[in-house]
Image (cartoon, rainbow, N blue to C red):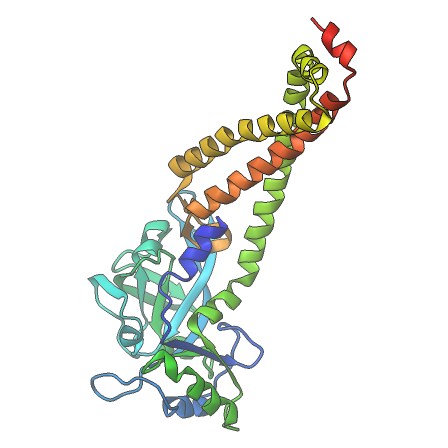
Length: 343
């Protein structure tokens, strides 16, 4: 889950895009005034479109309700009001049906992922927001990203919700090398109290709480399963040692000391854990890779990667080592006479 979420978050990241937020806030909590917005449009290093206008998108975010098609459960996710430059700012956005929203009208466009997961986002559907009906007029894809995204005209949204400031601003640079010049211009302008971050850094900061939860769940559940597997390995290896007392006694009688006996049991324990790791990785890939998940209202696909399989193999070898330690010590401490008398 954590790997899939992180892949989803950075799926469309570009090095030439920058996010500006009010100092000390995230993209959804900022308060960029119209005066600051006018200054941002004139910052150095900003790319311009074919008409010569700066490619800057001002955003205003509000929470809206969605109901899952499969279960009917309610989920809240952001409706993002954006200015008209969104298609120039996000070239990965491709319309598959309908059209984009018109400035000044209560219209929505929704990603195909949103339409698949939630009811009420078909073309022509009406959604009630703050006492008014908003029409869904377009569907779009956004490259490899498969999260639910809904856009509207920023000024219309702000008027409906009684807002006078933007939540954040995002702009496209002429080249990634212009980032330092832009950051310097913002930090030295007394009219601007903004943080400047590359798109990837801003996204990682915004999703830190979600990633922290997913990491905690992953390692907490993984640790519990690892403890159970290790205890099972201990029981199995104790039985193995008891069944091989005569072989162990023979090795000790012909001159092998305790070190090789311990090493042999630990090696066998780790070798037995290896097929389990490979089988588990294969089953995880077959059953879960690409499976859709939507915890906490955020949609992404589960991802089973080579690095995860390698990490699972390392955990399995560690469990084999720990699980074989006590049986190995028992085998090494077994009196030779007692071991040779075993049936």
